[in-house]
Length: 68
Figure 1 (cartoon, one colour):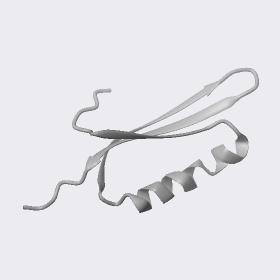
Figure 2 (cartoon, helix red, strand yellow; figure 1 turned 135 degrees about the vertical axis):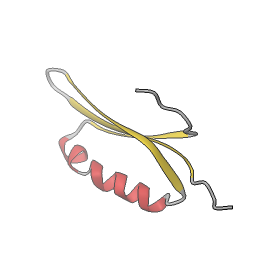
Figure 3 (cartoon, rainbow, N blue to C red; figure 1 turned 90 degrees about the vertical axis):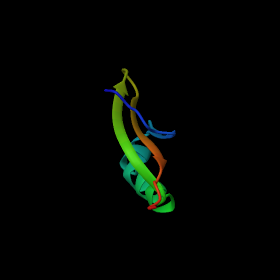
Figure 4 (cartoon, helix red, strand yellow; figure 1 turned 60 degrees about the horizontal axis):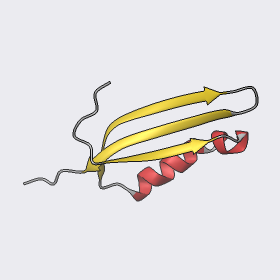
């Protein structure tokens, strides 16, 4: 995966079941509050050990290009 032309990355992560279940709500709220960005790519990762499961969503973005 080659990511280019992004200026920032927003990371959402959760380990508790309740937080994992509501991670989509947090992402939707962030997207609604940041409508002036262009999403370049996204990555979703999941890791686990014997007790914990961690879900991470990364959003790579840049300021939206303004029309000339």
